[in-house]
Structure formats: C-alpha cells, structure tokens
Length: 360
Ligand SMILES: *Cc1c(COP(=O)(O)O)cnc(C)c1O
Image (cartoon, rainbow, N blue to C red; front, top):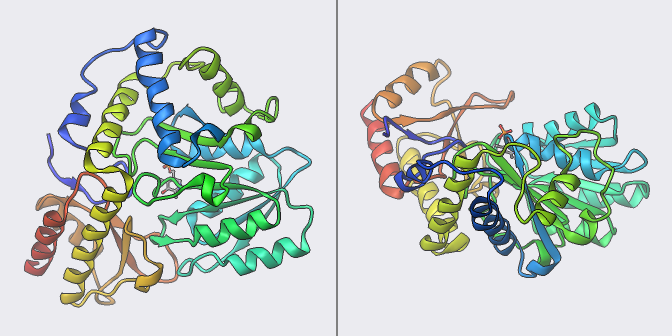
C-alpha cells in the first residue's frame, strides 16, 4: 500500500490505520456521522487550537486548503473593510490574488521570500494606515519552509486593534500555537497537513464573537463560512452539501493518533528530529540549506542545487525508485529543491534517505 514515502508538504504519508478508517460508508445526514464524528472533530480542533476553547468555534469546509482561505477572506472581509496581506512566498501572494477576485480593498506588503515577515514593518504600516481593519499572514510559508514570527506579528496586530487571520495550513498540529494567548481571530488549516489525514476538506477555527457578525458577508454560496457554521451548529454536525465522509472519518482517526503520540508538542518534537536528521545528513554530504537555521520551520526544508548543472529530474527519479518522493523548489531567486519533514515519517526514514543520496 506504500510504494514510496511522500516527503512533501501534503498530501503526505499517512498511517495504515488512517487509510483503513476510510473502509466504511457513512450517511452524510445521519446522527452517527454528524454527532459522532463531525461534532467530535470540531470540538477537538478548538481544543488543540486554543487554551480558551469556549471563545472559539470550528467550521469544516469541503475542498482543499485554498478553498478555506478563500472562504475566510471572502466571508469575513466586507467591501468597506481594508485588508493588509503580509506576503513572503507563494501562499501569502495567493491571499492577495483571492482579495483581487473578491475586489477587496487590499494592500499586499511584499517581503523577501528568503526572509521572515517583519513585525516591525507591519507595525509601521498600521501606524500610517488607520483604515486597515484586517491583517492576514501565513505562519509557515511552505514555499521555502520559513516560519514567520507569529507571536510578534500577532502582538503588533492586536496592539493596533485589528482582526488577525492566519494561514496555518502547513503548521497547525505540528507547531504549537495558542490562538487565545496570541489573540488570533481566524486560523485556517486542512486535513492533509500536520494532523496527518487525507485530502478532501479544510477547516477554519474562528473567534465565535467575530464569526457571529459575518452573516451575509460571503459573496459565494458554497464558500459561505457563516452559513456552513450555522448549519453545523444548529444541525449538530450537519454539512450544507455532500461532505467527504470517508475523509472526515479518517481525519477523526488521525486526531486520535495525534493524541496517542502525545499531542502537538510531541509531534512537533518528532518533526524537529526529522528535520535535524535530514539537515545534518545533507550538510555532511555538502548540501546547503536555503535558509539560516533560526528562520527554518521543522515542516519543510529547501536545499540549494549542489552544482550549477544539477539535474533535479534525474535526482527525483532515482530517489523515487528507492522509495522517496521529494518536491521541486518554488522560488525564482535560487535553484532549490524541497524535502518535507511532516507526515507518518520518522528520523530513521531520513537516515535512510541521506544514505541513499550519499550512494547516488
Ligand atoms: C498547503 C498550503 C495551502 C493550501 O494549498 P491547497 O493546495 O489548496 O491545499 C495554503 N497555504 C499554505 C501555507 C500551505 O502550505
């Protein structure tokens, strides 16, 4: 069932037990599914995300992670509001593209792809732009693997009294974040990243008091997070339209396995160990990381091509034949490739990978 391990930013390698959880059929309108699975997932997500769960609520949404980012920006930011997007990679830029599609008043602050978003720069911008109502930022920019300083960013945004939206797609469940402590208002992630489920839906964890004010804001029916939330609340786990039942059931198994592993802190420690094993091994072979260690997340690591004439396609095929699928780079300033550290993968897998690269 596992021709190769996915060392990618998602979909990623899942356990046999998560895959097996998909072997039964569920009725999308039945109580066993709605109350037994969907409500349980919503409750657990809020508990993972916030030390004050009573202030937050979770909405699940069909589709990939981008659908949830779009549902949030389109369902929360009003035509008269002003959104500031801090972008240091493809996913930050994508939030700007979504804002354009919805014709939102939006300013994209661009940062270098190889540097973290600067909280000071955001603060300075907010000092001069009272009209800004919402700020959105990516936590782990999967484009490079840089981990943006979320606590410092949140502190600046909150000091200015703005609503904070965080794309925590590739970090939630793998890097500890406390929404209540940091004052985050909306946090977005999806099933197939650090919770280690399979792809098919995403979720938004929202400050209840703010989401309650969002009735009628959405300009898309299927991406209306308020309506989706209200239906889930009133219907005790009902979705408005067909939900990916097998995927949702597998996600509940993935949450149980996260708990079994010891929660987010333990998973974070494993990902850090994966990352360390990979980087130490690759450095011993002469490979250089794109980012300095202090900006690097444990989620995905970018490496420079070892030589100018490096043939990535052939490197990729050789590793795939040996059981590892890696990822191409995504930035323009440097030739890089990426290796993901998340999923059901362990330090021993990275030891094996390094030995195989050594033997090439
Ligand atoms: C994976 C990811 C997304 C969502 O991508 P999809 O392809 O729509 O699932 C968004 N933001 C970040 C930071 C991601 O890593």
